[in-house]
Image (cartoon, rainbow, N blue to C red; front, top):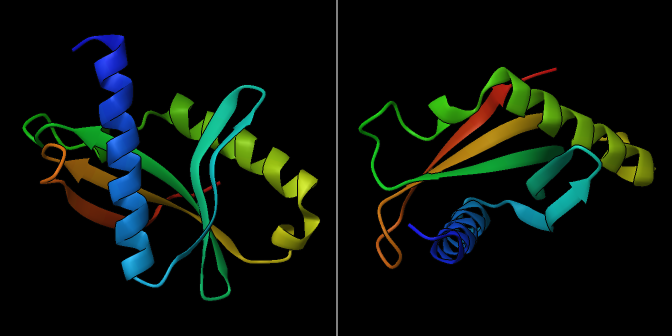
Amino acid sequence: MSDAAHLVVGRAAEEAAAGHLQRLGYRILQRNFRARGGELDLVATEGRVLAIIEVRYRASDRYGGAAASITSAKQRRIIRAARILLALRPHLARLPARFDVVEVTGSAGAFDCRLIRAAFSL
């Protein structure tokens, strides 16, 4: 898949994940927060809990699924970016926080989303 096609599918997968989360009652606060050394795909609240959400897309779950692709190095980058976000937005730092993952499989128009709450922690 070309880089451009990969970006298009990635954006569509993030949109599908955001829609899935909203149907579950999440309130999306921010998309694609970029900080030095890391990026947060989605930042949301579920009730009074701050959810930092990593969206992982795979065409199929043949090789262990999308969540299996989140390495410890990737987790460290997400955590680093989350700390920067909380420093910039202290009102969010008062909320209990967790790191969720949304696995997105399939293809555009037929995505399947699976939420993993508290997929990893500090």
